[in-house]
Image (cartoon, rainbow, N blue to C red):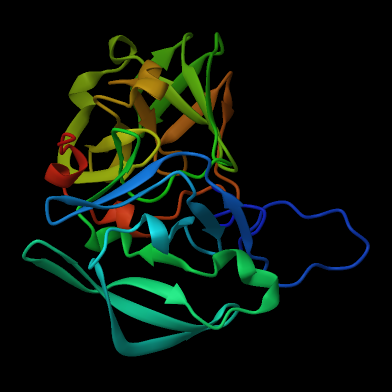
Length: 288
């Protein structure tokens, strides 16, 4: 979860509410300085390099990075006749992005008739994330979308007994699970391979990518599809769950201290945006 997407406080599917006497507007946009150096690579070149990026949080969307025009390489942007209308930010002009022999039609945009309340975005350009080669913070690639500073993951060791079953078969039984708390979502319980009947897991040709945890692999259990998942090489920030396995409640039986757990409304991760469309090669590309 982030500030404005999935179940975040500024998203349409917010799981909490603001304790105020009057209802807030249906849509609230929020902008703040990123306070990190961000770079954009395209056509084998650095086309933008800025320490003054502004993040725009828009309901139902991942955060979007806006670069000052002065921090974009000359001759990178070619304005085209195509324009669109943003319901909150007004007229939007689009650009062809060029570098070396590579072009990205509608690879960037700029809001050119901003209302006074959105003046922070004046003179700034956003790049279409999937159209660029890569985005970086300092020298590390950021895949999927701009990192949301309001997204948090905590991992805690537990001694509670976790039992996973499928029909009459016990799949996992442990008293040392890890529980992963991710902003806004249900706790996810991870089990060490030594505490799993590994013969019950059938690897499938399906992978997704989490910008905060890494590349995820999935397993069927019997005829139950995508019943479990694992991050074989989770990012260093969440390395404790590397190669551990989590199981999908409501698909297989997951019990904590004898109590069966279920996902409540608003706790399911919603596949959304370019991070779910990346292939394995793009996810694992090394920095230049």
